[in-house]
Length: 82
Image (cartoon, rainbow, N blue to C red):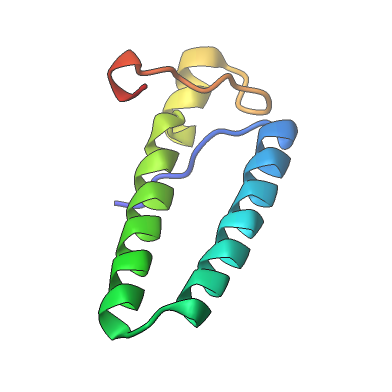
């Protein structure tokens, strides 16, 4: 199931710039990788961090119902993930 995340404009800009940095550094690492095995490890690791990291934000459908303010929500902090 696809679930959108509730982000403020500021959060979206920060994440966007961070994702650009991740993409640029990943591309450089892939270019410098010795073989396909190393490339697979790089892609697997980066994908896991990017995908799993986004789950820390409240899904949009829950944010609107809980806060009534989906335009500027605060991300939920899960202490077990810190």
